Length: 130
Image 1: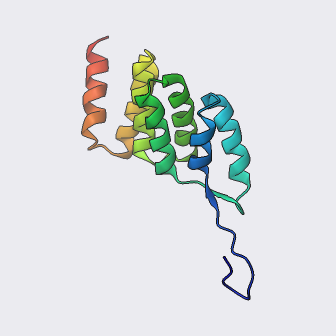
Image 2: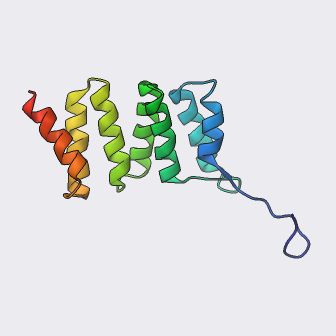
Image 3: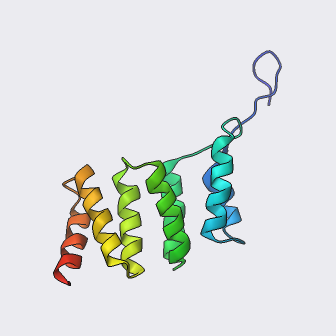
């Protein structure tokens, strides 16, 4: 495609799509290593926090909880002001049996968004089961 001054236009690739293909053959740790490399190459790649969250949820739904955890931890570190990113990390800790971590992250969600009902309910459930 040529647009301006008859020069080719280079379209950036979405990082989550590259990782989605990569995760068919590698684990979450390796995928995050590649993420870090692509993140630096802003001329060729772009990052969408919500798409990365959806990628983590795909892994979660496939019961690849450890891989989902790695993706969610990275997303929460990259986008600490996104309550959904923190929530999905918390729910993954919960399913992995890391209840203290889940409680910590649900509380962080509620600092950002005190009206997040599902986070309130899950936190209440975890605290009442102690």
